[in-house]
Amino acid sequence: MKKLLISRLLILMVIGVSLANLARAWWVNGHATLVEAAASALPEDMPEFFRKAGKALGHFVGDPDRWKNPTSKFLRAGTSSDHFLDLEDVEGKDLPSDRYQAIELMQSIKKRPEKVGMLPYAIMENYERLACAFYDYRQDPENEAIRWKCLLHAGVMAHYTTDLCMPLHTTVNYDGMKIDGKIKQKGIHARLDSFPEKFNFKALDLAKGLKANKMDPDVVWNKVIESIRDSHRHISTCYEFDQKNAFSQPTEESRKFVEERCRMGVQLTMDIWYSAWLKSASMPKHY
Image (cartoon, rainbow, N blue to C red; front, side, top):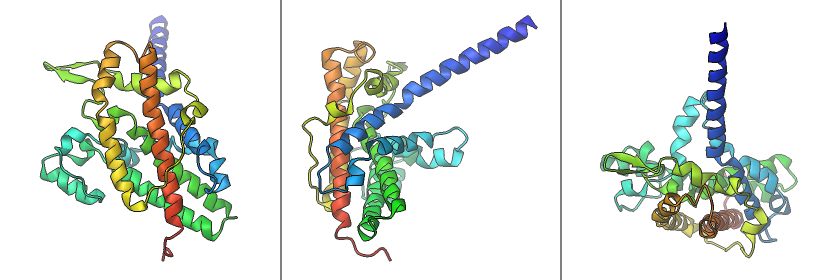
């Protein structure tokens, strides 16, 4: 009986530790802080309900991580690759602006699309869902269902734009670097991913001085690709800070670095939200 009790206690301890680690690695509150910052800095010509919906957007932005639920095997398989793009695997080739053409390209260079990632397509597809929802809002602005639809699509899209600003979502070395057959700095992803939540970043601080830029819908795709490449350039800096333990015990420099990446995500998010709103003004009827 005593052995059975000890075994059960050990199992509970393991489960508790696993859940704690999983919660830190999800960074749901970090995503929420970034989108609240983006909502707070939107221009006044965007709908008031949307500008004031930071908390709702902060909930919806976490949905793509909730879709990783272990029991949702179809959903996990269909959406897991939307969170990243390993640029090294693209081998310098220009990505087509079509998810399925990209899959063909990756297969032609002997890469598995679900391993390379589909991040830019997740952003663009949800950007256009949001534009369609904004079009509906323009036709029927008092419809509460349409308002919630706008917020849902905007929140989901923002998950991927804020994933993009985190450099480890753009590399095969997303959680450690293979050197001499061994993985070095394992766990770097969680240490960086949890930083804004763990060290109490505030939405108002991240939004300070930022303004949404008008962006022609035709250049949104190029902006997304350019932003992924920019994020990728910071990978070595991530590893340098982590080697100094500066993500677990922040320095002024490491905190500034993470804050700058977050502000980049805030800026990109509100620019694309704003572009979706402007695009909706000139869209034809759906049908």
